[in-house]
Amino acid sequence: MRNIIASLIAALLFCSFAFAQNPGSYHLVPQYLVRGHTAMDLGGGFSVFMFDRNFAYDSSRVELHWPDPGLNVLGALSYRGHPPLSFINHAAMLDDGFLVGGGSYGFSSYATLAMRSLTGTPVWYHGFSTLTGSHSQIIKLLPRGTSFSAYTYPGGTYSSNLYRLEGNSSGTTYMGIDMTAAASFRVFDALALTDPLAHLVVGSGFAVALPGDYQALLMLTTLTGAQWMNLYNLGAGSLEDLVAVRPLGDGNFLCAGYASFGGANLEGVLMKVDPNGLPIWCRKYADFSGSVLLTDAYQLGSGDLLVAGVFGNIQGLLYRLDNTGYPIATYIMPTDRLSKFHDTGTGLRVSGTNTEIDLDANGNGCGFTTIPISNVNVTALTPPVTSIPVTNAMVTITPSDFTAYARTPELSWAQDCVLNGIEEEAGEASLAAFPVPTNGPVALQGIERLQSEPYRILSATGRV
Image 1 (cartoon, rainbow, N blue to C red):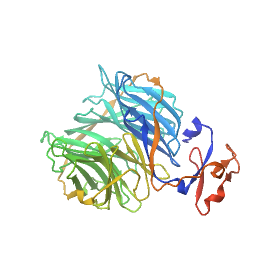
Image 2: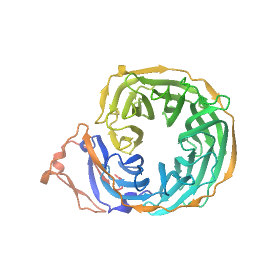
Image 3: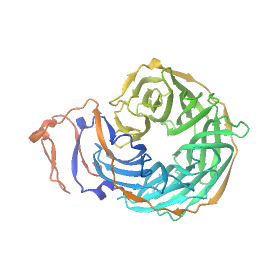
Image 4: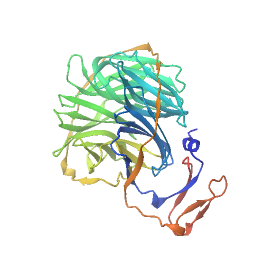
């Protein structure tokens, strides 16, 4: 169903050996040309990446990569969004293509969605100009076969409403729900639950009765709209944002974000909630040497938690915590901020703005600098919860057709380091699979050097 690589390159075979799967760190070349990127994992170590290029002479551009597990680019495409400026916030893979969401700015502002086929061919490019409340961007996409849900964002501001759009890969039908609350708010992330049409959504907002008192926000939505919305007072008195929500193995959920205590004085926030949004525990994380902003969380097989984020506004951070949120190990990544975890099917990676870092089963990766656990001050709190009334209304969503302009792809990956790497021998002793391509038996040249090392043979689509 998702044979993307096979549709772009010949079905070559390659070997993947246990000792060759050591975690590595990669950076984009040229560096510092993107605002950020989204990984869409295919399994077997393969991922497709969507990059949002920084503004330049040619405005913002979207670039898509199909690399192998070692991040060697096998295929790529690039296009310019609707002029004059575009923001690209998220991408998702449907069964029959790639969906890219963002916003376009000019004399008019539009939330935008672009659909590309599995081989990168343009299918459609739509803008939505009828969304009220300054909702000028698509902030989050949740794929569902050939259908999807999309959430809107008022471009850095706050609004009393939120749109949830329902669409399909043909781009022919859109259903919209306008969820209006007794609050001004914005959202950043959403998570599909066991029922894929039910979503937990996180962000920030303030009640009408308390203007300017920005608090953490969590809400549950279904096809009929918002079922509940809660604000959580984390004690900052300035700005509190939840930017990620993740499932936990016990059926509960973990929300990550930050609380601002004025200027660049930020403290990271983790809050564990039950399915009804009631807090189970909440922790704030401060470091005496710089601000802390948490951007994502991931539960390891051991039950421990990995948390990614930003330290001092310019560096990445990675915390390994126990299942109650207290540090086991703490690290910084000096070269890049960290944003999201993603599971490739053979291992875990964490993304930065310009970086991809492989992590082992314990959350270790190369390129990190260890910082003392004593640097991190953890404060437990029980946030007061305010339930906000919400009304839901069905709305008609009519898109406009936009044009995307093809550009030449420019980005590639370069490896920085390998954690406990073992180099393979070169020349006649190197490992090789043959014949290639083949639909029959595969022979391995140099197999005698494996000794007791386990190995797997994968197709170019990642199938074992």
